Image (cartoon, rainbow, N blue to C red):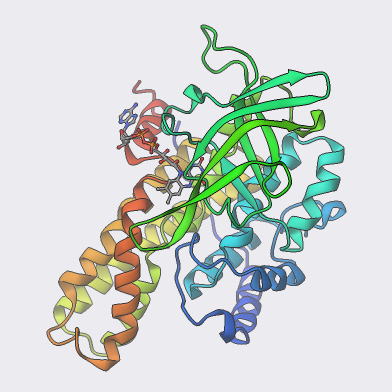
Length: 380
Ligand SMILES: Cc1cc2nc3c(=O)[nH]c(=O)nc-3n(C[C@H](O)[C@H](O)[C@H](O)COP(=O)(O)OP(=O)(O)OC[C@H]3O[C@@H](n4cnc5c(N)ncnc54)[C@H](O)[C@@H]3O)c2cc1C
C-alpha cells in the first residue's frame, strides 16, 4: 500500500547545504542563464567540477569512485543545484539512473569500465526506451538485438532520446527474443557507445528552439557480446526498477522553480495581496511535495523500491510545475512587463512556459502515472 512516512533530513545535511551554496557562489561563469529544468544546461566543465567535489555518484561504493554517502546527502545536493538553476544535464541521467542500473545489474567488468567516468563527471548516458510507436506502452518496443556468434546485431529506431547527440552512451531497451504471449518476456537492455558504434543520431528541435532530444537509428549495428546489461530477457524487470530513481527526485517538481524564485525577488519585501497569495499558495504546494520526495529518499536509503510513491510524487509534482508559470502570470502586478526589476522574472517565465508542455510527458505521462498509482492502491 501507498505510504509516506514522515522523514526528516539529518542534521549533517545543513552543513552540506552550506557547502553547496558556497561552491555555487564561486561558479558564476556557469550560472549566466540559470534554469531549474534538469534537461537544460549541458556544461561538461561544470559536471567535471561537481565530480571533483564528490557530488556525482554520491551513494555509490568507493571502489567505483562513489562517495558511499546517504540518499539524503544526494537529495540536498540535487535540490541546491536545481534551485540555483545550475547546468546539470550532461551528467544527470548517468548519475540518477544509468549508474545505479549498472551497479545493480551490470557485470563486474561493466562496473569497472563505466562507473568511475560517471563519478568524475566525464561520461554521459542517454535513456533508450521510447520508439516512434512505443512510448507509454514500453513493452511494444520493436528494436531488435539478434544474437550472432560474435555479437548482437541491432536494428530499429529510438525516439526522444535526450542528449544522445551530446552523450557518450545509451542504455537501450531491445527485443532479444520474438514477441510471445508474455509481452514482458524477451526484452533486454544493451549498452551502446553513441560515438563509436556507428549509430545515426539526429537532433529534433523542440518548441523552445532547443535541440535536446533525438532520433537514434540502428542499422545492422554489431555490438560486442559483453554489452548486454544483466541477464538477456530480464530487460522488463530491470527497466521498471529504474523508475523509482527516475520519478521521485526533486527535479520532478522544481523544473519551474526559477519562476517562483524570481517572482519572490521582484515582488520584494511587501508584495501586494495577489502576489502574496500566489507566493503562499506556490510555497505550500512546494513544501508538501518536498516532504513527499524526502520520504521517498528515505525509502531508497532503506533499500526499498518505492515505484508507486515515486509515481505519485512525479504526477503531483509535474502538475504543479506545469501550472506554476500560469499561476505566476495571473499574479503579476500591473506594469511588470516593462519594469526593469521584473526582467529576470520575465526571462525565467518565458523560458519555462515554452518548456512546460514536456513536464507531464517525459518520464511517463500523467495518465500512465495515474494508472501506476491506481494499481498500487489495488484499484485495478
Ligand atoms: C522532453 C522529453 C524528453 C524525453 N526524453 C526521453 C529519453 O531520454 N528517453 C526515452 O526513452 N524517452 C524520452 N521521452 C519520451 C517519453 O518518455 C514519451 O514521450 C512518453 O513516455 C509518452 O510516450 P509517447 O510520446 O509515445 O505517447 P503515447 O504513449 O502515444 O501517448 C499519447 C497520449 O495517450 C495517453 N495514453 C497512452 N497510453 C495510455 C493508457 N494506457 N491509458 C491512458 N492514457 C494513455 C498518454 O498519456 C498521452 O497523453 C522524452 C519525452 C519528452 C517530452
